[in-house]
Length: 255
Image (cartoon, rainbow, N blue to C red):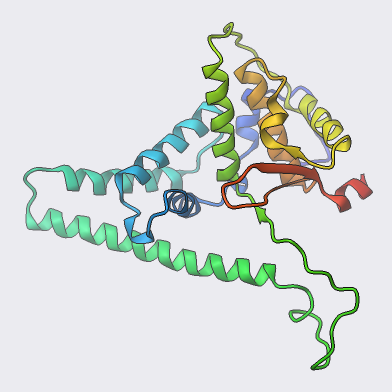
C-alpha cells in the first residue's frame, strides 16, 4: 500500500489484504522463534510441540485475515509429512529414508539461515565507530556513553503478545457477539495520541479499552502499519519480557 494515498474507510477485513508478506520474516524465522521460545536445539525442529505451535500461528494469522504466503503453507506441509512418517506403524526402508532426508534438509536450511541471521544481527548491532568510522589506536570517542541493551521484537513476538490479549479477553467471560469492521485508519491517530502522552506504553495496555475482538484486531493492524512506516518502535528490555512501544524520535520530529 502507498502511504501517499491512505484510505480512511479501510476496514479490518480489508487490512488482511493490506498486510502481506513484507511484514513477516518468513517460515524459517517462525521456526527459530518457536525453537528459542521452547528452549530447544535447532535439531529438534520437527518436535511435535514446534509443529503444533507453528500450525497454531497459521490459524491465528488466518483468523486475523492476514494473507499467509505459500512458503508458510509449504513448511507446514513438510512438518506434517515428517510427523506422519514418524507415526506410521508400518513403514518401509524407502519411507524411512525419505523422512530422514526431509528432516536433514530442513535442519540444514534452518542452521544455515540461523548463521546468516545471527551474522546480520551482529553487524547491525555494531556501533558506527569501528564499522564506518575509525579512530587512532588508544583514542576514545568523546562523549560516548554505554547504552543499555534492548531487544527489538519480531512480528512473531507481537503475534504472541496478541494471543495473550485475546486469551485474556475470552477469560473475562462471554461478550456480546458484534460482527463489524473497524476502519484501521481511525486507530492510527488514537495510538499516536496515546504515545505522545507517555514516555513509553506497554503493548497490552494498548487494548485496555477494547471490548471486542474486532477492536483488538483493528488496533493491532494499525500498530503493524505504524511500525512498518517507522513511526513506532517496539522492543523488550529482557528476552521474552513485556513489549514496550514508543514513537521513534526521528519520526516524531519529521511529523
